[in-house]
Image (spheres, rainbow, N blue to C red):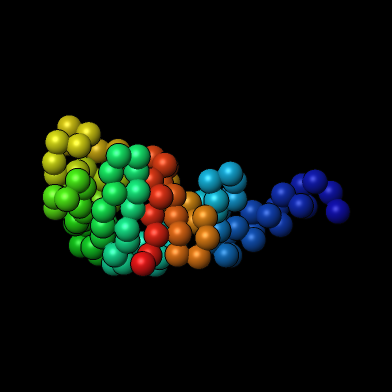
Length: 119
């Protein structure tokens, strides 16, 4: 089989399964996978000095806790990246976009390096 045929087969497989790539961070989730696996599910997270709970609601609102306090914000999809604006002093209210990676069933890592998991 030629390299071109192999490349076309890989692209077709990606399009059919919805999977993108697997790398050192894990499998990169597509927008469809993010909507089915992440949205509407409550997670725990760990990010350096912060840990807490996190939930992205289907209406574009997110709730999270950090340092024992509750916060909110908004999210949207931009292709296969999730973009968030946090409603607190974190990131000074600016929008940041990132990929999600599945590292194991029910376990994820964000493009920011946060470890996220279902309890």
